[in-house]
Length: 593
Image (tube, rainbow, N blue to C red):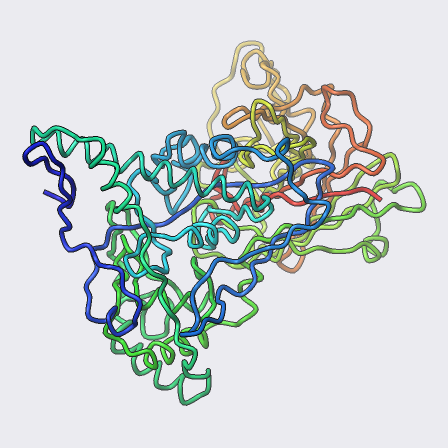
């Protein structure tokens, strides 16, 4: 039987089963072995606030703070500006916050089976199992600071995006609710265990056991005299790395060692590629120290309690040397404020490059929902308006130009932006029933259709075709052109699907969503968004534009000094991106001059 509660003479007693006692010293830590029982906090796909509540992005400060005996790992803190002052009227409680930002991935009861879970890798955490990977306590039960750090910073290398924009009170509410879910899951397991053995549960003893099992241990102390990142230390670290780490992470640190690995749930998992500089817990020395000493519970990454502090310091210096210190800025999401510059004259149909050169370009981080090795797309965004029309330009790196989607194995390059106006931002994945979002989409295949509508005979020009009744033949190069057929025999066209209408290709279109799985095209009469892209020297440049003032059925009305939430998505056809397999950003702020 696993560690838990059994009933003896009408009492419940805790079977410790090797539970590590709280210890403060590093030497004591080295003498222990640890049950791999806690896995990771991963909280949501999205985060944000609404129009009129623009906030600066929350960039976590260093994660350590000096103490008398050394440095203790701590969560980042963030001051709240006067404009961000929280009141009882605006702060949502834990269940509300979890339902708004977390449930779509983690499930309503925190079991990791939300509606979006099947599209995500790594998989969302099952909080009811009570297991966490990024911990800094000696018993590896996460402290509030451990959980808060993930809420604020997110988890690079996964679809767990940061919620650092939330105020301090809301972040605490969210952490408290996650602990409540963990406690509920532990109580369920203990009750099932007692029932399995025919024992009676005594509420008082159950409460004591829950309190004991949920209590974080002492925080791992980080020595202040770790070796400096000098060449001698890096060399010693490489020598230790080749002996202890290369089997999994590879001799060069690219994660190309043993590949057949699984986490505690049996899900395939790969060793970290240190050369990419993507660290789920952070690149800081204090966090790497905790990962090496405590391991990453629930994964093949073991604890190394027998390493001496100087050895760990050397290993950290070598690992950090494998990637550039600027890398985190390219992979960690931080909220940005984008300003749409007011043009002095009416925007022309094709805005010249010279005019775009005067508009601020903002770098935007995007990352895949289904994590994979990918090159940084280097997405930059610009925005300009003339009081009548808003134009947004996206430029990003893409080594291949994919503009067809005829064959099953072909997928087009695409880009989209999503807009929201309101008090509380909804779930990034297509909004919510009380938070409708506008989606402006550019599709390279639809743009190619403007030149020649692509159909099966485009990919297979020598195909044999049976004639439909009443079909109009042609003597041209296409013996079966789609636009010469009766719509009644092309059902998607007859149903009004704009992507199936050969006479009106829509490279740019606008859609609406009110929750996961609700994305729909707006009617053709309400299609007021236009878009055009060009590919040159391995980069796409796409301009999407729309009138500011539109009827309600055509989308959000923009104008004046509006501040709205905006997010971005990219699809790489060469990587077989489509639908929910894509690269996405977090919510950012867009304001018009």
